[in-house]
Each structure stands twice: as structure tokens, then as C-alpha cells.
Length: 181
Image (cartoon, rainbow, N blue to C red):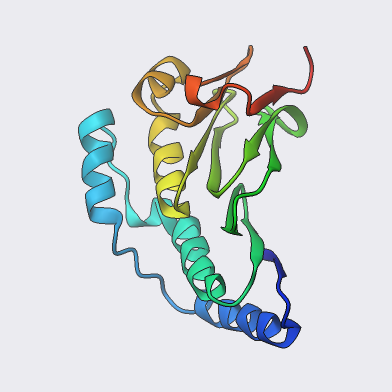
């Protein structure tokens, strides 16, 4: 995990970052997953397992440790980001599903988490914005297998990229920017 944290008391910020590292070394506690898993299963027919959301759980635990100490923090673990603090405007890249080095679009993250799940063989990726990292990762994982049309119809705050184009749900209008017209 990478973390950037800001706060007036640098000693407390450094201590909190150390506590985050210690928290990540311990097994996770995915308590809210049961109700989320039921909701996802009812709406999509997809079963999300605890193994599917380990990064999201780790980011949520890190955010809880930092939230009382830092003014703000940006956490990153793999293809997932978590913002701690007052609302912000951070651009998160939406990569070409077949080539992660090429950015097709960006989405404006204001709070919470952004998680992208990609199937390079099918040249599809699903990015979900959600209040918690656990929810963002669970939904992006579940929606990936459904294809862009169904993913966009079933949920909000979703960006879907396939071999042809990038599309997003109406609630993200004005927050997704194509890299190439």
C-alpha cells in the first residue's frame, strides 16, 4: 500500500502511518460484507467472496486508523484508491483494459473509494466509486463479469471501458473526462 497523509502534527501523522502498517500485517475483519454480499447477489446474481475484497478491507481499516489523526490522506492499493478527509477533487485514470499503460479517461474522485477490476482477455474494465473501499471493490468485482450494458444498468457511479469505448452512469456526468476525443 502507498499512502500520502497530511496533518498539522507531523509526529502524530507519522505514528498513524506506522499504525496503518501494523494493521495491514494482521488478518482483516470483513464485518459489513454479509449485507453487501446479499445485496450484490440479489441485484446481479454474482457471489462475492471474502477473498474478492481483501484490498478494500485493508484500505477501509487503514482509513479508520488515519481518520482521527490526519487532515487528509490518499491511500492506494493495486487498482484501488481511498480518500480520507474533506471532499477533494482527485483524478483517477481509467486505463485501456488491454493495455494498462494507456489512459482512456479519468474520473474525478471526491471522497470515498475508487476501485477498478479488469479482464484483459475480454478487454473490459469496470470502475466503481463508493463510500467505502470494501463496497467499491465488491461491486467492481461483481459487475465485471456482467458486461458493460448490464453493469451500467444495475448500479450507480460506474465507469465501464471495453474494447471500443468508455461509458458511465448518468450520476457521473461531468466527472468523467475522455483522454482522447
